Length: 192
Image (cartoon, rainbow, N blue to C red; front, side, top):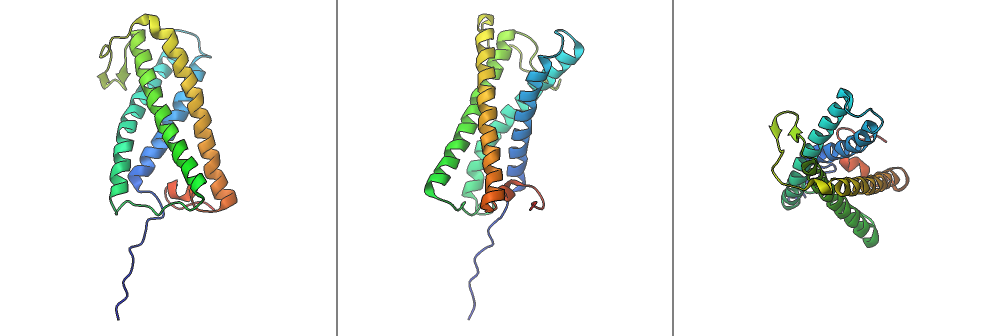
């Protein structure tokens, strides 16, 4: 008698999903920190302008990642090659996780749009690491600059707060629930 074996389900997300997740996390942290660091620097200095240029380039990178992420998420959920076993837990906990992920995606998209609009309202160079220039693609009146800057800053704080809650939830799962949720998103061998 032959035994029918079920395919082994993945215990970690695929490499591309991990790269997208961690590039997003690193970008959000760098973008938030750099915006606060340059406020401490004297206006017009090469260091401040350089930091702003890297901030803008990383913002464009984040925009590219946020175009790819939802598309890859759809592909990876459809394909059995990339499918993951569902997370165990109560319906409420799973629903809350979906709401938080949805809110993170929404805030990231809003933040990117606000960042682009703000930069266009400044009518200054809008380059991606010197490779290409997005300046002037959209005409935004300079009178909106301060409003867009304020919204961009407010959404940044909301994004950091929600991302921090997301990180604390992952640590809660790992250290208190010990359910392997965090290990699914870690590359290589998981820590204990």
